[in-house]
Image 1: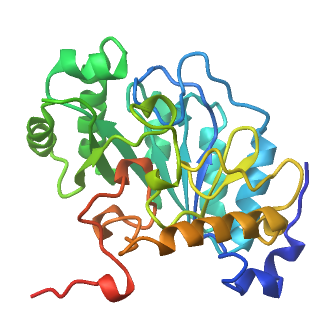
Image 2: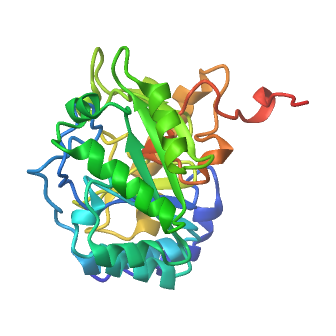
Length: 309
């Protein structure tokens, strides 16, 4: 595939009635993961694959995103460190002037990857659950996952690699606050957030995924690209593909009829809500990653903006 970005400067892409050029993109480069978490929105696990997208395909997508004005990409999975092309893709994104975040479970990091993660412009994000090893491993369904993740969080801190951690609250009585204290004790400073279960994928508990599970900013200057090339408004709206980068350029997808129709559907849904929140609290940065699941304390927009001080 050698889809170009000639249409990236098309006037229609700057018209918010049709689309917003993505400032941020999730790149879900694999569905493979060492863990098999019972709440995984992506339903990833040991039997997942890296899909139809080759490293060259991903490089081309990164080129197109850079041409569209994207500022940051987040490599996710599955577990992105299991994809052999991750170092090359990080290097390519940095070379295109993009910031990079890698959302990893930190169960295992190859020695050479630490040098990649330590490069300027790269940061890490991870999920954590509890200070209790048995509870943590019951949630992740991965023996030894608590100790390994904890050790690699400490290693990232030791190396001064920017890191944020989402403590995901998925069970009644879970030792969430104790996990926050443990992380602070390790040295994670100011980048810890408590997040909650999103009912998508294996996270479904009492409802099927629907628009009520979305925060209100899906597709607004952000998109997600899957390992099979599918493009979604966000990683949580997986049932709403708007195109496939294996078939057409991102610029055409973002200005195409499926994106326009999907944007109209989302806009109609979000307009019924009394207050549309911003996707992320400012401490989470621009990435709106899975570790920054919206909560009631998100910073709202427009007339909902609170008065401080």
